Amino acid sequence: MRTIIVNGTVVNADRRVEADVAVDGESIVAVVPRANGGIEPQPDDQVIDAHGCLVVPGGVDPHVHMQLDTGATVSSDSFMSGSIAAAHGGTTTMIDFAEQRAGGNVRESFEKRMAEAEGQCVIDWSLHQVLGGVNEQALIDTRELMKREGIASIKLFMAYPGRLYSDDGQMLRALQMCADTGAMAMVHAENGLAIDVLVEQAVASGNITPDFHSRTRPPELEAEAVHRAGVLARVAGNAPLYIVHLSSSHALREVVEARSRGTNIFAETCPQYLHLSLEDHLGKGWPDGAAYICSTPLRSKHEHHHRDLWEGLRVDQLAVVSTDHCPFCLREQKLANGESFNLVPNGIGGVEHRMDLVFQGVVAGHIGLERWVEVCSAAPARLFGLSRKGVVATGYDADIVVYDPEKKHVLSASTHHMNIDHSAFEGMEVTGGVRTVMSRGDVIVDGDQFVGTPGRGHFLRRDVSQHVR
Image (cartoon, rainbow, N blue to C red; front, top):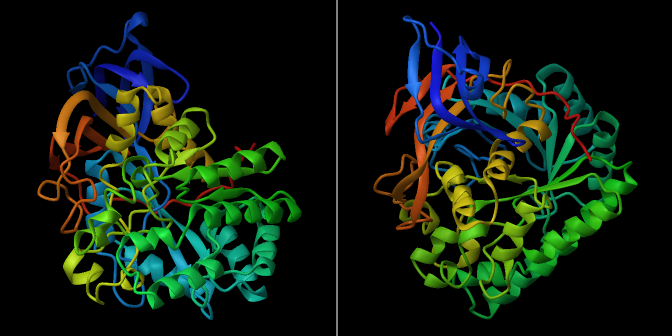
């Protein structure tokens, strides 16, 4: 039985058109402009009327952390609950991480993470491989994962010494591997050694309120690390480089400068850096300010970061909006170790709200509809080797969202589907929202109801991206 989506406006990253869409099985089999007659449903077809709505590719969130074990606690969304929440927000593909820490084994970390996710996800999913202990064996094992498991990206940390940190030599060796294989190197770009000094000094001086999480991770140290990562990527042979959760104007300028030098660099930002701030959120103090401790941190509203990041999205200085979804409940987890910013697990939950929060940029005139689709769906699919995702077109997976651009609703912990006891965006009224979500031809969200099945999501082997500048 086919499904026909009629009367909607199909929006892809390159164009929009009044068109009908036919789905058969897991794939899109036709997109016919209504100017050319559209698609006439047959008696056996299921029909979805998208009148007044946008028909867009399902969102691709390339940066999430479900049931992440930090060593002290575990992020509160499981692969099941987190993927259900993602689906409610119009995301139909997510990429999480297998995490090798210092002294650990790459292959074992991957197998452990695969076992944790097995049978849980309601949407399609994949993994990046974190290298927290770069050595010869880790690089050999990572190359094998690329060949055997379709892992086409790694993640490196310039922060968190002793646990995940890579020094410049380790960075260079890993980037050389990426230059050789074409794998994407995701980098958490902050000068972790300098930050640790500032944290130690702040705590010794009694400056332990949530805002000092940001004040001890200044934008200059994010920018310095972005600059250094770009230099190392060029020296390595112009490895594909992807800066994660970019939060500041300072760091964005370094991305632009690196690109002007021919660096093969891309960057993402996240909704929290477009909508939240040091003063209004971390500045709430205890206990509420703890909810907003994440890294990279929220920035000052007085330094034009929001404005510059929206402009960066508009002109393609920033390629992607992800969430870095890593939720922890406030009292049981965020505040469990006491009221000092350095003791609070880092992370914000937002996987359910990404499409809506970025759509507010369309409402405000910061970006257009096509650009919204590009940064939420098409670009992450291209950059991370998801060749059947991110486009509403014949031959692609039928990951489709019927999106009502006029729907008004309020974001709140009382209504969201994430397994977290608070919302970073509590009380925010947004315009635009999901009406129907289809994943590989199955309707999994209908109105406000989840109608999918846990475990139906497929693990995606990914290709090395051919879409590099």
